[in-house]
Length: 274
Image (tube, rainbow, N blue to C red; front, side, top):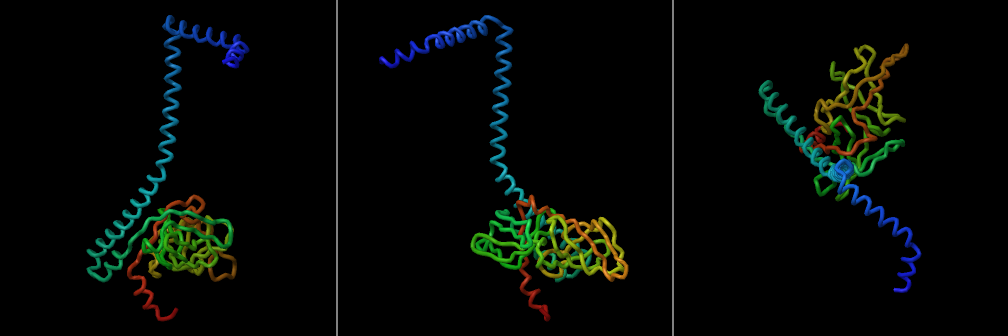
């Protein structure tokens, strides 16, 4: 008690000043309508700003759930699109076996939990594994194009070799004329790759779309890979040097779809020369 009194006496001047300030504010805002209105408006601005901050914070923490929901919805929509494509072709081809090949694809949404894009041995790790039915050799897509191929799987995770890896050689075609080639990557940029095996007699143009050809059983036919951005044809060369700007932005990639083809094993067994 003695120490408390000493503390009060020590700061008595400051406490008296504080009490007078409080009393002055109470009198000012209770008697003067203009000051009271100004104070209330200022208070409302502060409260509104705090509410907006809290709302934005709450929305930020719900983004993860919304993104995962969107990834699942994209997978369902892609599967529906393939099914509708098969139905349309059914009315044209009248060949049930032909149509069934277009109804076979399924998609498992997954999240990228680890990624390397600035080395010669780039990779991704996804949060889906054996317990979700993921297996080695499955294709992986983003909403903007091809990502890569599953290279290793354990119970909970899957590793993916992306198209921006020197060991990848992806069979593809030019959409406009159907000419087949291979997409290869030699670095260093994760945004570009090269289209090879396109002869000089083939007509190519900047902006041509490069897409999957559906021959490997890893990806459905006609999935976007990228656009031709640069064309070179040195004198005496047999093939073009074509630079492709990839549709998938690997540096910002967060959600993907793992492609499921139940006929993959049967298709693979029919390849006589491996």
